[in-house]
Image (cartoon, rainbow, N blue to C red; front, side, top):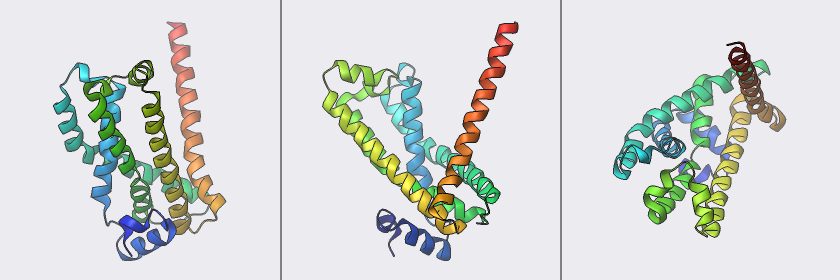
Length: 205
């Protein structure tokens, strides 16, 4: 079994082998890979290029990626484990964390996308209005290629996550989906409630 290769085509069997041997295998490397994409996206979202040079953003993303990834994967795993218990799951935390970590391996596609964007657009890739600038610059084809890459990564992440949760939780595919949907619904409801409270507070002041 070669998990770095087999997870793409045999996610459930790969997760089964990983949790049986060592559920922590590859955790730090996968966290770093995923965390780099978080750091780069954060830099774009907040136009950090207006504050820091390109080289600083790239080095910062490489250095902080492991931190962002570890935190994000750990929190996500705790939430999925807790929600899984609500519907009859009993997987240990490390096994759920293993699933979450390996489901983020497709983030490698996003890293390749970032390398392409930085190679073509350099500093411009880190402005928050970058997609608009790409369209205006008649780079629509490249933008569509980027979006395709991101969609492939997202879909493959979702497939690995569902199949992995099925394996460690002993779920059917529908319960595996429900294990993911419950926290999404909870976050949406919480966001609506928080927005409502903030809006009420603003109107009263």
